[in-house]
Length: 401
Image (cartoon, rainbow, N blue to C red; front, side, top):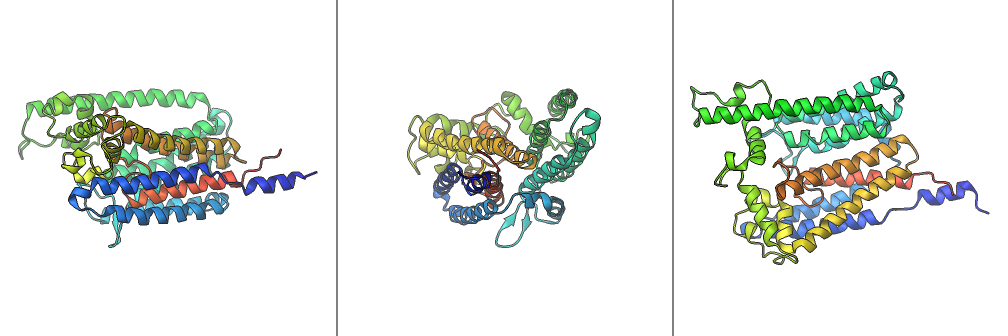
């Protein structure tokens, strides 16, 4: 008869093979469709994507073999380095009107992406150590998590990168919910969120009125962002207004609404089976701009060239990865492992929902990349690293039978 220790040892070396197979499939799709999206301009980012995938799989393997508790042990150090990196971007280059990258010459590093993981780990570490009970008992943990998330959110907002900043709240509330924070906290937070949306809606409405009264800003007429108490840039208000009322902000579809319209055309004309790899017209003819076709709107290229079948297959792979994270959370041997696995699934789902949503017109355009498909080294490698840690939670679980 086998002892419990023998069973534990066998369980600890088991591996979830579905997730890495899905990641391999998504990585292959990424390389193929990035190459296709840039074929007509001669872009070679697909070659760099191969390198990032190799680095990412290496990070996945190493992270899966390490005991995930090492992240809890060094959470403070990792978090401090991530915050330091966010501070360093303010001395970096300005690209597309924002400071979001640290330039190392051969490649650019985007600290906001790794800070999502660092903050997630720090939040999970705080709650794993905190006493959770009634509201009074839980208050210290709530305040620590709030401060933990507020610092990177503020620094990312200053870059400015509103899209990346908005990924943090769902992760924070997921951590608090899984940690069983009292319901009263979420009720109060929901009321505050509704009030915040009201203020934002009022501000966007005032922006529209200001534009109508001053159709052309000049030195004598300051930009609305200089007169408003709400700390948003005018281009961010423009994106929100374009999503809410495109016929008002861009009635002819040649301004802020252009990318959304071209992405919708790409998805709609892909049909059931698509036009074939490299045969998509929107990116090929430049209607879907080359600056966004291979990253923010890669799903539009995939949908046009592989159709409903190809895009559904990609989404199924994503859902299997997310389901795998949730399954690992249910089997985790401690609270820290469960918090890590669940919050990683929420991070991936937030990116997935927002990115695909903006492609099909149900969410505002924010510039959030699509995990494992969009071009970009920092986010891709970070996603591989996160899922490697989730694999470690699965491998080091203790499940007696």
